Length: 309
Image (tube, rainbow, N blue to C red; front, side, top):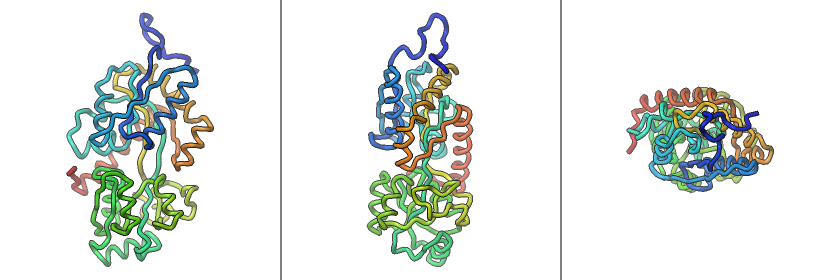
């Protein structure tokens, strides 16, 4: 086990000062929950961790702050699909998502799930596609905002299904879900965590989940592959990154401590209750995941001609 990270003889053992964890979203979201769970567990072992929420510009303010921080292990970023894999294709960023960070560990994932308003006359994905093709432009899909996972998956759905469905972007998931439940929009690729209560309450109907296996919270809902669209697999993810150039010994120490933190039964149970899976793994696993996601979403964005408005 790594007791502390090895540094040059003239330096103090790492960590010898508080570690700052930067969260790109407001308190209460998944990124914030991940950061605070990590901080709490490290705190139990005597380390001092400070969680700081730096919101704005779709997460790029926080990402840029970390990218330009000293590579000494004392600034850790809770990176996510937006800042690391989607936005690089949509806008000129003040940081290089591929070169300015060293991945530490992929902590949590949650698949998107296709839900429709109960008024939509479709009980399956196939029926939805047939209805959309027979009624071009009649269906609308809400998203959490331009460039969100729900937006990009929605565009991918249109590409692979050939359906004509209008995109309606919102400022966040909550107003999008609110309008879906009210029937102002007809469908949405929601985050599983947020969709499950609405599905169980009968306020929306779930047609398929973009995951490799069915999810335990909604065992009767088929996967996209089972429903006929295996290309649609993905959703939000969150992991820890540090500035590029951080010594490998520090990256390994953070990876080891994160594994211990997120493998703790109380943490796993809390995150599982929010329908999150915890891949964990090595820094190389996370790097490969980011690269694959960046290519996949880049292909969809280019094919759809998506631009940030």
